Image (cartoon, rainbow, N blue to C red; front, side, top):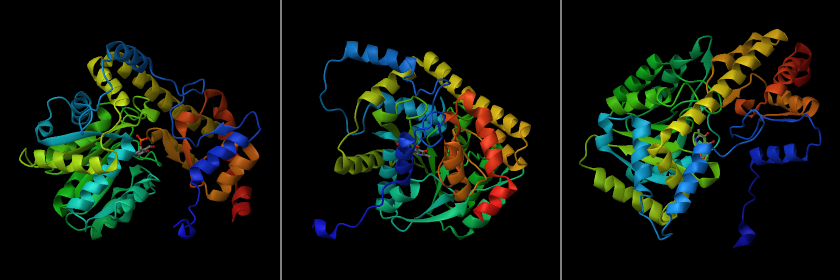
Length: 399
Ligand SMILES: Cc1ncc(COP(=O)(O)O)c(C=O)c1O
């Protein structure tokens, strides 16, 4: 059996992370790992989470099995966080707890493969590095549409042109906010046009909400999703609590299926549970129990999340200012209007290599940097390095 084991290439992201760890330069800058860091470079446990854990430890009575759908209070809280209090769609949706946002994507991929195996998944290009592997692992075929920027923001005409070949029943995978890796988010008007496009063409939106609260605010970031939920019969949602609750290693997320009415909900739940049962039976309790506490006592959590959001926005502004000050090309100014933890630098792989080799700045080879990984003291040095590698001399070198 093992003689026929194909060679599996190591994950390039982890290779970069290891290279960073082995780099002995004291002033190296890690902009690879997709986690939030505070101004001292830590990825802290939120105080609200710590308080919740104390309460949970004091009240713990049993570690017996839970429900197949996971923590029911968590599922209820997640559906309200995503759709908004009092939303009409709350009455026609089914939400289950999953193993992180990744688990939500995979459970929904298995769901699509079961119900609609011929559906093509339409994925943004560039897109989140794990979307395609998750969808293809479920046996689904994937095509892409460009997710580019013009002077004003998302180039929606290109999106619409590329989706011209999508057929009714195909699934369009959209990022609910803070697009990874570009940071390019639709405007409210563009969300409306995307909803119209899906309606007209009979496409099913799958909204991946991995950064709710890191763009414009916890409610604002859900506006696109909520518009889809209001206007469309069927919507799929994958949500993660890794970033906005800092629960990364607790693997906490949710998968939601919105149906035309309440009729099919029991069957949808049974189907989702059948899929999880054949994978991991039921999800781990701890992260979801914490999240349920945050829903019950939201003040501290929401304040902490808002502090994180503001820090990311401030770094964007300060980096963009520093790039102006040092005379870097205008192209970099898109950083200023982009949203969330990531942006894609207008640099090619050679320039990203030079950034790493000559300046100790680590981003991924496609140009992605984690804005939330940047410390205030490193902003000017990063701006200078970006100016240097994007200079004409460097572009000749790269060619
Ligand atoms: C767009 C997107 N979706 C899903 C995920 C997965 O989230 P989780 O860590 O909760 O599995 C990520 C994580 O980086 C992401 O960026």
